[in-house]
Amino acid sequence: MKSTSPFITSNRGFVFPFVLLASAAIFILIISAIELYKTEQKLTKNLFGHLQVETIYQMSLHELREEFSTKNPGVKSLNRELVYPQGRSKIILSEHSETIYIADFVIFSNEGVSYTFSHQIEVPPRNHESTSHENSIAEIEELPNK
Image (cartoon, rainbow, N blue to C red; front, top):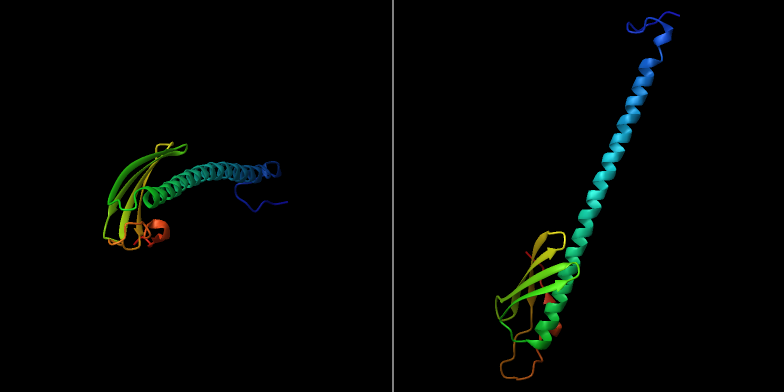
């Protein structure tokens, strides 16, 4: 049988280039699978960290609402730090207008990552004639951040 390839001159060396090509393809597949696995691990770690930060944010927001509506319904500003098992949160509350408050959350996770969130809270107008706290933050309406 006559070879059509200029590189292969005998039948004894005909298999080597195909074995070399197949082993290189398998090697590339294995390396890419390992790199994909490492990337998935990093992505999972980042998503888990984001979940922890969101959890701290939601707990801080809930605690701020409770603090604001039950203990200090007429507060104009607040600077507080809360500590949780996953990390800590610093809350800075300031009055933007009579019915709108801006709450800035700085979240520090245990992994050393910090995130900042700004949240706008709308409250019913205060009734200056009444001494009761009927218009407290129990009916908080959240405005979307812009």
